[in-house]
Length: 71
Image (cartoon, rainbow, N blue to C red):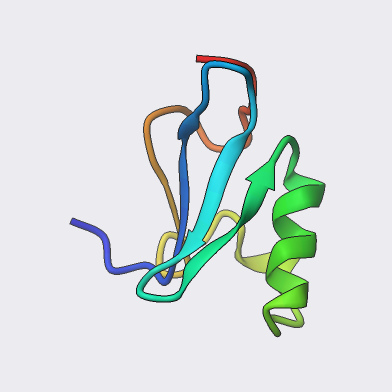
C-alpha cells in the first residue's frame, strides 16, 4: 500500500476524480491534471506539476494516471 500523501481516486460514474490529502480531507473533484495542480497549489505545494508522476507524492487509484473520463 502506498504512503503517498496525495491520492487521486478512481473516476466517478459522472466523470472526474476525487483528490484527497491522506489524513487531511478532500481537496476537490478534478476533471483534468490542471485541476489537480490547482488543488495542490492551493494546499501549499509550490511545484505541484512536478509531483503528478512521482509515486512518493501521488497515488493514482482505480484507473491510469491522468485519465478522468467516467467509470
